[in-house]
Length: 102
Image (tube, rainbow, N blue to C red; front, side, top):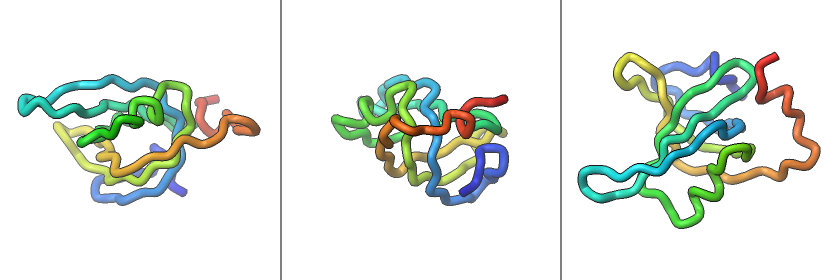
């Protein structure tokens, strides 16, 4: 499994990250989306989740550990993820050293 620091433009990933922040936005076409900040021990990267479902705000709540499927894209000279799907993982027994810089 790749870490955030190893991701590059064009990667399609299945990975587990800590949700650092999540905000809901609305497009000019009145469609909701999420901007999510993902974190692991190597850094952070923003992601966008388009066409959100009712439970996506709960899944991507800050502090959750999520398993995601995503595509890594370059946008305005910065990498970000286009989140295709995500599932929250149980927090009991989580090794937080994998998600917090030392």
